[in-house]
Amino acid sequence: MKKIYVAAGNTSIFMGTGRKEFNPKKAMPGFEHYLKESIDGTLALIPNPEFDEGYMSNFMAGRFIKQGNLAGFLPEFVPSLLHKPCYRHEGACGSGGLALTSAAKSLLSGMADKILVCGFEIQNTVKALYGADILAGAAYHSKERKNGDAFFFPGLFSDRAGAYYQKAGYEIARKGMAKWYENAILNARKSTKSQEYHNVNESLFEAGMTQPNPKRFVEHLNLYDCSKVSDGAASLVMCSEKGRKGLGLELSDCIELTGFYSSEGNITQAPKDPTKLTNTAHCTSKALSMSGVKLKDLGILEVHDCFSITGLLALEALGVCPEYKAGEYVYEGETSFDGSLPTNLSGGLCGFGHPTGATGVRQMCDLQQQLCGKAENPLKTKKDHGLMISMGGNDISLSSLCVKRTSS
Image (cartoon, rainbow, N blue to C red):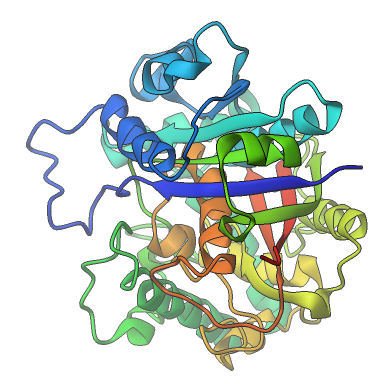
């Protein structure tokens, strides 16, 4: 219909256990700190930062920091948004993806040409067990929480992992999950703002192979299979061709959005087959169809790996490997930095961190930085296309976006 560009991606430091400067016994920065750090960095990359609309994604600020009406903070950080339309988007961990697709629709409608998109979450305000209860709001809380694991979402995806072991084989599945963790940390070590940047463990794969212990955690996952509790923010600009010129952005500093789709599952229903991410499969196929891109055209992936098993299931949902073969695909190095389909070069959720409301925006920041040659962990690929998958809840709120490198 018309060209849409993404540019000026920037994140704050993603803070939590693993960062040397993180100390939960001391007062921690508020959400304003992380938003300002991220947005100031984005604005500094734009010659004429004047916007028509602002979008903010967040999941549970109302509970973690007791703050609502979040869009009202956008004019504080972006003065040109005063008296302009501003919106807050919520779709659990997929909130950022929803903000991105909503911004794309506004640009296509012609109602806006220049949109600032940002997302944040602050989760270290409570102990992990209390945080697990807050995050359980991404599922059907009144129906599922009481009978769920104390660590609710790790419990849900532990069930998926257990079912997957039975069909794929425990040993190769666990090797794939351990390799996923190893890749996440190796990539995160090259990203100075990542939560695992300071990780110096020399036995990453061995750590990933740790036997799950249901007496201490959940039945089928270990702690290395899980993304961590994180605080942080991410931001970028989305614009039309007219908006790009108005912002003063060079084409070489942008990537082009070629296709996108959002797909909602039924939150009241348990997955029919826990080894399948059926909504992810539907959403990504629609996004690829709009873009006209085939899987063989993809040079880079950013998938939602809240847990290592989720990363494996996402690869199968996308169709890059046969069902129940993702463990083998990852273990053999296909998703590694120098593999056939490099995935989550930022470290992903397991490595870079997972402040839920910021994650989807962060994924797009990383695609933009990689395809524009501005990433700290740069990948030289002859393929111009990338794809991201943003997921909220247990395969419920999905957004998938396809992008490509622009020609200067």
